[in-house]
Image 1 (cartoon, rainbow, N blue to C red):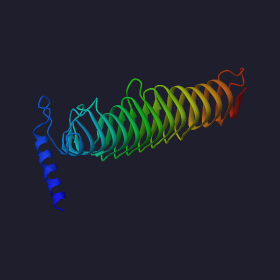
Image 2 (cartoon, helix red, strand yellow):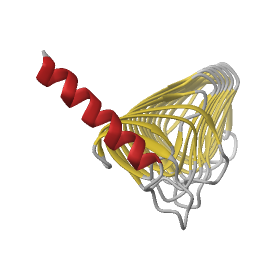
Image 3 (cartoon, rainbow, N blue to C red):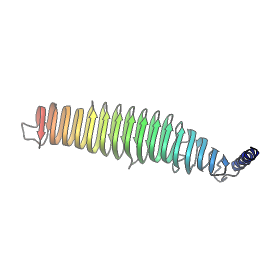
Image 4 (cartoon, helix red, strand yellow):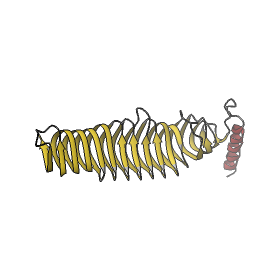
Length: 266
């Protein structure tokens, strides 16, 4: 027992010493127990392995383990790497791998991998891969950004380049590029390039080239390959079947372009 007490005193001494022995050029302040980069850290340690607790992260380089952050400083951790579990009001980093739980949001300046849960917004500028659940929005907004996996959101889901997997939300799913998988929303589903597999919406569906099964209120495509079921179907080039109240296939002969109930081109 005495040996254990001595060990605790030594660990606290080392931790207190570390508070004043950080990289003064960047003004980091933290108490690290039992050694500088391993164990338990309180404060803004730049590199740490273990359990790290800090009010607001700034200039972090790499954390492996559990990172508990109560607040955030916008754009102050764009190059950081966090591997493990991040918990906070808005946990952020450059690349985050593992489990990220935010009361308001989760943000990655580059990539997000793993399980991401938050109350309002999940956002990244690179690859977002895994399970993403947000109360409001899930957005991959970089020029080469993508969503890969299962994304569930209360309002909207969007990616600049591609959505691969399953995207389900309350209002709208959209991308400037491709959708490969299943996308479903109440009002709007859109891919400006290629859509492959299944789309479900009570509202408006649009895609340049669609390959698969589309179910919508109004389905509009430049190329339709598969089956489209909607109140109103419109395709400049149809290769498949349209089922709806009114159906338009621009590549059909005159007199067969507009047909009620069913239209087709094979």
